[in-house]
Length: 453
Image (tube, rainbow, N blue to C red; front, side, top):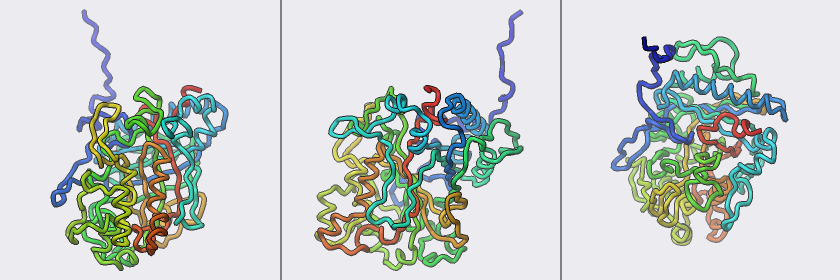
């Protein structure tokens, strides 16, 4: 008599697979995100609700077995969550990134020296592609440069999914996810949580929340705007597509190859920025359009999503001409000669990308926190402040640093004697916190390199 093949009855009904998705090799790609048409411009419909949890590790340094056990536990925890919620906006996305202190405090130098991605300078591998965040010229003196070990970014169309998963991961006790008891999800003893940061993007939430909280400038936020400053953030052509932000994808940025340990990983920048809404909306539509994009744009107030196609790219010569001829620098234009390729290129995977293609990815979201929901390292005020939790991905932290310096626009501002209100929109922003992280590939999202100690 034939022996029945072993069958796993525990997962006879797996709701997470109702919508079939293949997990990407990266963490930052979001399966199931749809695209809608905004007056002929393709726009990604990003998840509505977001939360970031930052933490320091509670593990003793120098104990390899403890770190390896933690790696196994976090792997099981994330797998159990994803067995309940699909990897789509209707379920939950969890992205895990690691600060420089993780690699210097917990991973021996002989391992990091061998495996950490290194930025290329004139074709030579030099510093790690992950470097400390710095204070930029127009940052306030009070800015806090953070030194967390780890960051978790949760996103979903359903706020309860995020709240339930955060409780299950970081709070001891019995927990239910979608009504299902979970056994291996709690990992809170591995961490000391330093902050919880929540917010939203899309569905007209900025105007709704600002009006409800009576924030000055709320009534001038366009109905339907996805972010406080009015214009759409998730243009398909304004965000790096596929795996373009990864370390290895584009030649010339890092020493990584498709076979490297950190292939399909990237650098993540995280910051909190308060916004002067009343000041921003004291400008008329044309002035906001020119400062958001460039002074050559002519779209009317009904266009919240002006095209970001490659042919709209501003390169360095045009940026300087804008400053000379109009006395205005547009925020997008300030950085596009760095955030987009300046020639036709072919990726290491054989994909041809045209000049003007974006290689920088943003996953920022709005907030009314002041500055966070929870902050272990400083005060939290109940007075709501409009702001943004900015999250951006690039092949190297050095590239982000160059872009962010261009955003301040100090060189062209001095050269052409431009007032602050004419150099993008930095006059209306105050950054309170920032840190750079390495977001590893999905295969190594749980304590990368720990298994090699």
